[in-house]
Every structure is written in C-alpha cells, then in structure tokens.
Image (cartoon, rainbow, N blue to C red; front, side, top):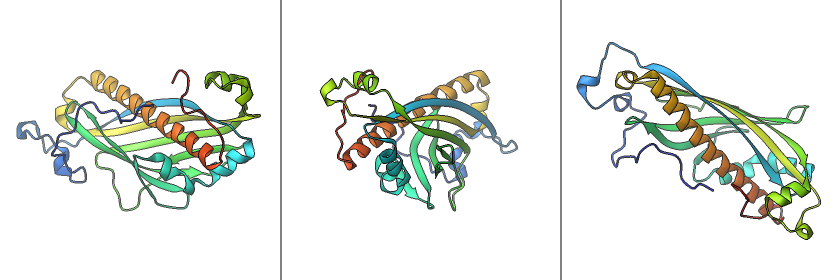
Length: 236
C-alpha cells in the first residue's frame, strides 16, 4: 500500500504560509498584477472501492457507527481533529504543480445511515478557518452488502479451511471537486494543460489516500473485533 502522499515536486525547506495571502503570490514582482483577482478553476475525479470485512452486517454497522473510536486513528498520518459530533477536520497534505503549492485541509461530516442504509460523507465548514485559495466539494456514499465468501477468499489467497462464514462489503463511491484560485502567472499557461494536470494530480491523491484509509480501517476493524484478516492482498 502506498505510504506517501502524491506531490508533483519536493516541498522546499522554506514553505509559504498558506494562511497569509501574500505568500500565495508568485515571488517575481513582474509576475504580479494587483488589478486582477485570482481566477478559480475546478478539477474533478471520482473513485469506487469496497472494504471487505470478515464479519456479519450487524457487527460491521456497529463498528462504523462508533467512528469516534476509529476515524482519527485510521486517518493517520493525516492530522485530524473532531469539530462536531460527527465531523472532523483533516489536513491531507501539501500538493501542487508548476511551482504552486496548496496545503489541503477539509472538514468532513460522517452522516449516519438513512432508512435505505446509505452512509454519506460530505464537506462541512471548519470553524474559524477560511481555505486559502481553494474550495472542496466532497460527496461520498457507502452501503453495506453481503459478498461472496469464495470470491473474497480467492482474492486474499485465503485457504478454504480458513475462510470466514460470512463477508460484509462496505461499497462506496466518491465524487470530488476541488476549485483552486490560481495567480496570473499560472493562468498564463495553457488552460487545457492546467486542467489535465490538475485532474490527474487529484486522481492520484484520491487513489492513494483512499486506499490507505480503507486498508487501515479494515485492519483496525479486524484487530479490535479480534478477527483474523490477511495483511497482504492480491493485485493491490
């Protein structure tokens, strides 16, 4: 499983303060134009995955419902902080391209399941925080389903005698949009190139962060429930 966030380039030792608007501008005075406001461009990606849990539906639902006990732990090394009964602030990391860096921080609300059993995670405001030059629209849905024991055991290369009696899958889908306010020296580049680079970078970030968070949640669930679970997965 990937252990590092995607970065387009190493972060310099002296990093800008993203809460200071002056540090969001290019360092070359000739590139600055005080008469123009930064223009926001939107980047999009979606992602699907499934967390296989070697337990029944009720046990998995009980675990997920008590997210106060596992969410911050499983989100590491991301910095997390509760900001409400069902909400958290996450600092995902610092990312960028073309010499322009943004520290990604987002507030997420873990909405309890509705009557149809659909769990939702959505963006929520972080108290006393204004994102410096970007906006995030995070919309995720998840549903618990029963999976084929034979197919899951084949995927994880589990011997038939060690297969669980039942496997529950947490199938989820993410729609993510990120709007970034670029300074003029970025917007002078090809818009198509900016769009392609931004979409590609966002897709890589989501893939790495989602896979890591899903896998750590699986391990945490099976450990806390005292259930066996293979740590090495096939074709991952």
